[in-house]
Image (cartoon, rainbow, N blue to C red; front, side, top):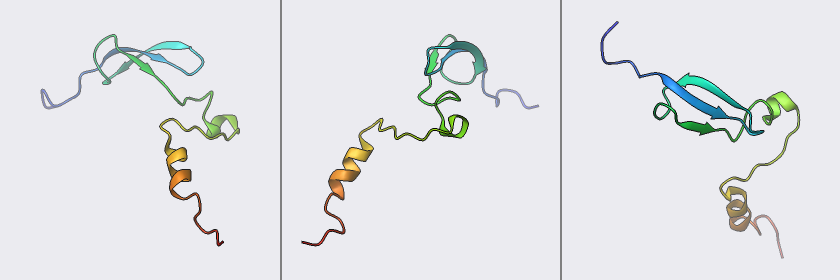
Length: 74
């Protein structure tokens, strides 16, 4: 293997949506950083079978405002 081309792995803390914490090795951030998940196996529809809308950045509000009267004839 070539030297100095591979990412550096280190331990980080991963916090799931329910507050469960686990240590993992990752290339994310620096040693000891915390990664908080918005979606994990306890909330993702693929595993739960429950579909719900998550509007984290106001994207749906922007969409609804932009296309509020689209397709309606007066």
